[in-house]
Image (cartoon, rainbow, N blue to C red; front, side, top):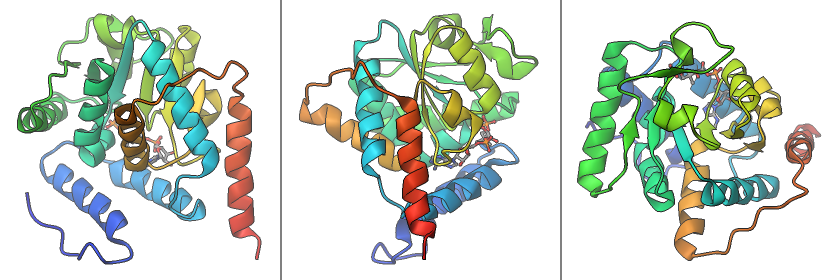
Length: 248
Ligand code: PTJ
């Protein structure tokens, strides 16, 4: 893998590193055509959030982890951007949670699926993580969706009770909620339909969220589900935060 040109002391190092990971992933054929546009939209919202984990996002992160830890069949759904930006972190999370991951992409082609599997399997071997990677063969469909984006694995997404879907699209999020699942999303855009449809929305940057999750799980913290959790309040806190940034 080619090296990133910027020095870690560069003020925008983290952002440059993420862009570099996407460039490398694009060369390997892992990404959708619109992956960089999606990332750019995320960057714009991250800028408005001050490129930090705001306190409401941390509350949502803990609630999501409490759901994942107490689930019967948890699963983590992975798309091209997630594998490219955070392949290591997401496999570590799955390892901690003892749950499978499922590669489930919106713009599905056999070439992209192969490139994503190869990339994840390389990481899995390097890090010695025993994690089941599903998605190669789809044998079920998400009701209410048309085309290849409805394809999924019966023993993964289809039968899951709690699903973490970082960077999901609105239609699929809605369809998963309609299946009765607890749907946990990571989305920097608190205005998106996904953010508004999900059971728990973490309005934060993907790699920061996964790092926080892995640290919380490693610390052995006792995670409790908040019974009166209101996702609307989490979104409102993000709107309010953006409002303070925009107020001169
Ligand atoms: O790999 P595929 O085929 O499944 O396609 C993946 C993309 C991301 C291209 C596809 O799902 C897509 O077009 O997504 P959208 O509808 O553009 O939504 C992406 C959402 O993720 C946007 O609301 C962005 O704000 C948000 N986002 C982008 N990058 C990040 C992010 N949220 C958190 N962390 C990020 N790094």
